[in-house]
Length: 285
Ligand SMILES: [Zn+2]
Picture 1: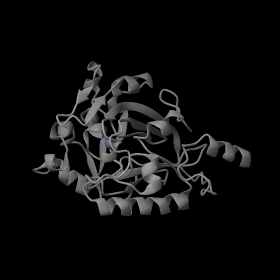
Picture 2 (picture 1 turned 45 degrees about the vertical axis):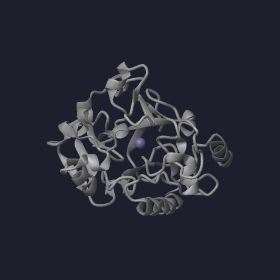
Picture 3 (picture 1 turned 180 degrees about the vertical axis):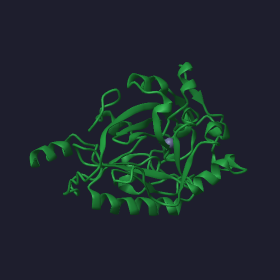
């Protein structure tokens, strides 16, 4: 077991907290498996926008992932990636300010289909936050129960979503969805196996997701609390975050949470870290 753990540590950029994680708590969770779905790429011209003070002028490719969880009580989808319609654009879609080009190589619908699912099969839908690279396909999930922080909900469906860099059109089908508004953490299935952690800062109601897997250590899916493993390790957040100070506090709180739970930290936009993680239709347990 010990050498196995060591091996895991070595294979892992996966393990942001490696070496400081003595306990593997398998817990009582009833998660059966989790699929990591490639949900696009974002090519940027100057990485220093995301890592203030370093990587100035350096081009970078951010990965983008969706995570699909099979729990005994139903399916949950975390984040929805870049919009499927971008799959028709081989050169991607460049933002008007020219700093990001977004790609979607394989539509999310196709990835779900490969697993035998349609959007209506998703019981719970939650996004780390409401920016376009996480809400691109949100409109598919109007029949799911939406799990969102009340503060994020107010920003998205309030009078000025654009003030938060949210695109109202991405949420049209969610306006009448069943919603559970959260004011903090939320235990999705009531058994501690999938827990939404409030991590405000990047947006007003940004959230991260803790998942207890049946055969391996739990994971914490960061969303954009941090954009790279580097950012997690160095407590670095972009200056354009909604609340920079709150962003730092969220990282501090999650560091303590990870220390307590032994969770591995998976950074959705860190392409290098995710190279080693099996992708859908393969799954992890
Ligand atoms: Zn993002």
